[in-house]
Image (tube, rainbow, N blue to C red; front, side):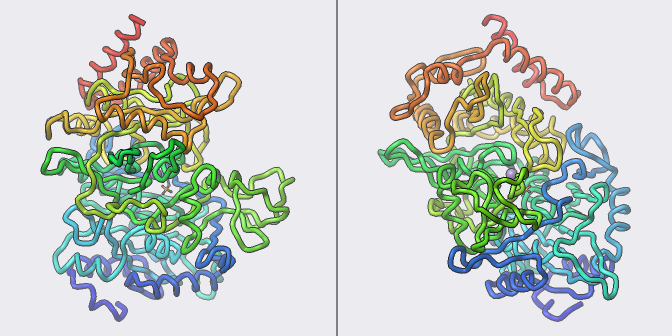
Length: 604
Ligand code: SAT
Ligand code: MN
């Protein structure tokens, strides 16, 4: 193996790397040190290869645009597997194959798959390097695009190898775009496996290890994120008694200077990034951001639940991001950022739909073609993304890298729901809150390569990310109440920013105006905030939401805070059928909660 490997003092890692190199047969091997020089060099190399276009140095210094292949634009949930010995361990919501069989299959897929390419070794830490709560992974990839994105999204390089030491544990994460080059064959700008049926995003939680083949995009390829920090970590967390969740973390500070931390689970592309760094419209209130996608949480010595963001960057959806919807994101990716599948303006800047600036008269669209506003297609792909360092966020919280995390006062659950689900609804207690999380559903978005706008159950926004049987996951959530004084656990709220009127108009303005809902939640946590008890939970009393300065038609407000009994009866029926799919892995407490909800609804 190549020089420079003296830094790898870990025997297990060396042995794995030798095996992998022999299997994949790359032309070169390169160990990433994580330095700024390396990052700059790799970006230049991506420009030379045509994968990256350097953006205008004045408008957007040290920023790059990448265009992926049109077959490779989102996560592929139908090609994502949890492989265990026994199918029951993966459960009914995951694709499964026997672990041993899948390993053989993967060995065949990966054979010689890096021919003509360089194999990059990326040691990375999810969570601060050296923290006892962090997890180390080593991603081996043939994609330099993955290297630079991982460098933004995680802590990468020599310092991680040092923390790993001679006998530390790491999660082996093997990735290939699945496009070996024959001698003399010219490369393309976005190599990947074009046939979706040949992509495999495979997790072996019992090892644990990850094998990802055929895609170079987002969560399919940046293996620290969904694969390690959610699917593998959720399985580890269950065994060790903590939580690995698809949640943003924010801090809310009142005009009096009191601070509460909130974590929120919403499906992909449902506004987590916007909420996590929102600019409140309510005077005097302040939001600071700790993370926009993943929270690892443990019960601390004081019995409260502490959350830490294991990532160091944002991989956010570009379309819809504007100075109106998310000014802090706009100010985060002004420099040192990567844009994928957005449009390129003639000034060398980026553009996307609903960016809040007029469409350019001419641009190059995400597929590399000329585009003008009269074209009947979008300039940016709906799942186009920015990759930006969290440290550049103007409202990053001072504690965002605190290895001990921050104590969570409230959980938010939500999704995209045009009807039935009210603006905000508080659980009666922990068990009822877990029930609410298990009942969450959302319309599908472009974050997954499949039909969008279809309503599906998405418990805790973890449907695509839970690395074990979802029934056991519910049990694990319920068990948190036995691990501490239940009164110290976060209060649980269900929110819905996406309600529409019968004529299709949005009932709630969302974005910074969501601070009005956060204020009520803050007050509830503090023991105030007026509420009414309803069959579905505690809703704000008629005047409890601070709507000062907001021009909200009263009929819209009534609709947002109404309990649609018939609609909820339908929800309950659908949930019963959904629960049936979990068989005896469904905790009895949730069946009891469902029966109690039905009973309350029947009383009206
Ligand atoms: O591509 S990612 O999985 O990282 C984004 C998402 O779906 O949330
Ligand atoms: Mn996500």
